[in-house]
Amino acid sequence: MYKRPALLILILATVTLSACSLENINPSSQSGESAAEQLPIQSTSSGAAAKPSSSGGSAGSTPASTAKPPVAEDKPQKTPEQKPDAVKTVANAASVTVLVNKNNRLPEDYSPSDLIYPDIKFTFQEKVEKRMMARIAADAIEQLFAAAIEDGEPLAGVSAYRSHARQKTLFESYVKRDGLEKALTYSAYPGTSEHETGLAIDVTGADGKCSATDCFGDTSEARWLADHAHEYGFIIRYPKGKEVITGYKYEPWHLRYVGVVAATAIYKQQLTLEEYDGVLEASNIAG
Image (tube, rainbow, N blue to C red; front, side, top):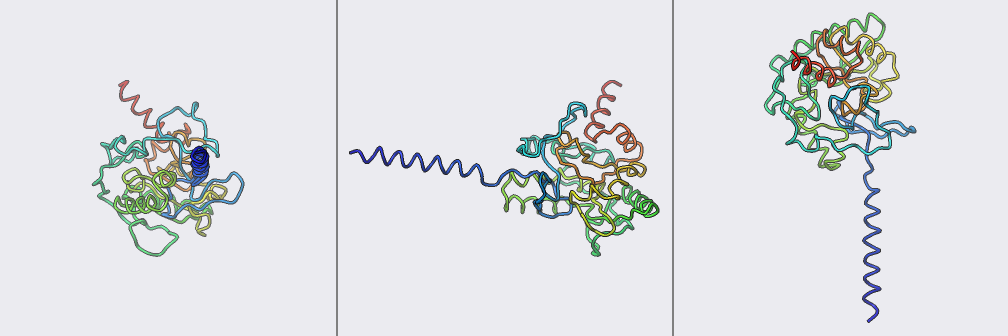
């Protein structure tokens, strides 16, 4: 009659051990949406982020002075992108300053009406949809690439437009492979990816090295973009130190067209598009 308590203790010990083991399965990744449509590759360097990188804290319009970059070992914060029904659908999808992020999505049936192929170099030869951009952004990226060549910093495109259907396919494949929570650390819900606007493009050096990876940030091409992209209407969409605001880690390769006026204001005031959008909203309310 003393065998049952012993058996019960053994079962409880086994369950406790299993729960502890599960906590160590699938540790949180710091990588973000792969604009180059690649699965993330873990870096082996100490403290380096997963590659392609970008991801993580909650997005919003928090002032830059209160934003604190996340600590590398912190787990990804729970943000509205994990509850798609709570994400707002934007009303101005065709605007060059439309805010698309983890809190704001494009209409499900949205597709830019003026997609064209910009005459720039890409890291691949195929004439596929990810070479396309909205006409205004395509014209601007041609000028930016030409200026970069003149300054001795030739560039190459990696990935531009991505249709809603393509984003949906990618995201669902990531969820199937890694589960929803992990997939959200490196990919975006369909409708919340800037690539669907036709206004975003990922770039790299003309040699194709460091394509959509953290090492691009250490290149002269990245420094040139940081200093000159705004002159052609582009911003570094996910700047360093603003991860809590944008919801993604630093992506020096991800350019977003917003027009010269907005890009210059964002550059000079060191804002994110979220912060700039908040300023515009406040001005409209005050006006």
